[in-house]
Image (cartoon, rainbow, N blue to C red; front, side, top):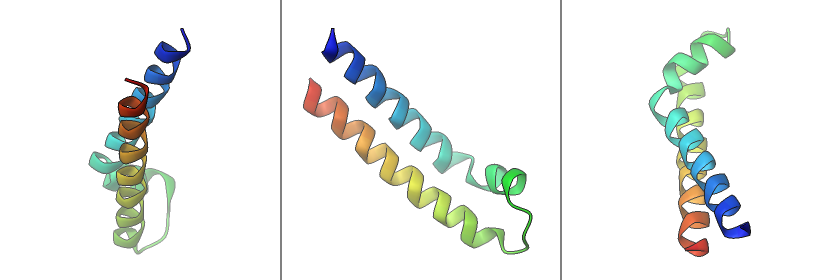
Length: 63
């Protein structure tokens, strides 16, 4: 049972990371109102990449 819960948590983290990578520009336009959105979208893509790695690592370790 714990294994299934950890896999679901890993999948949700992985999904959140992928969403951050692909929708970084849209998310920064909605959340931030300052002029330099390139740096904010780059930071969001880096965070999404790290989240994707963490989520995939959780899934691999549990299986």
